[in-house]
Length: 194
Image (cartoon, rainbow, N blue to C red):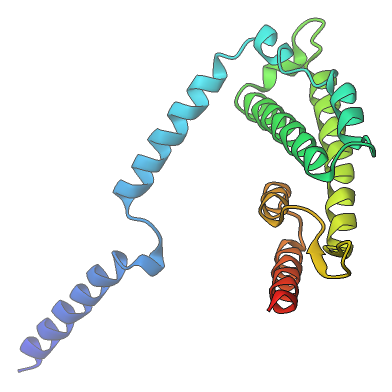
């Protein structure tokens, strides 16, 4: 009788352990981890072959002219947002490429006369400058989304769809609050038109 009970308990314990090991709470299965590692390895291998010339082509030194155009107070706000958005995306893509290339192939920064650290720092600084000015413009616009038209009725300061897109691209920490302000401004204009 005790032997049967011990055997039954052993079988149940084994079944429980085997069932728990495949539960999602314990993370991905070994097959999923292997697939992920193979995919990550393929991406890393592609970046390991990056040359200094390819990295140098991602230089961010030419951004100041585009930034000056985006900062032009004489241009329409929608045009300024568009200029900031395209410049931000361009610099972010270059920055991401450089970071990925350097993490996959750290030797790039130590090669003879390598300009890679300078290029990386230049791109980080450029992205920080553009992000700050882009964020300042978005916050300035968000402070006054509704203006009065010539008849004294509430009107949108600019195209809300374009402004939402600018907020989404920038993705600031207060993104949800900014989008809520846009929604509130739209409701205010809709209520005034009824």
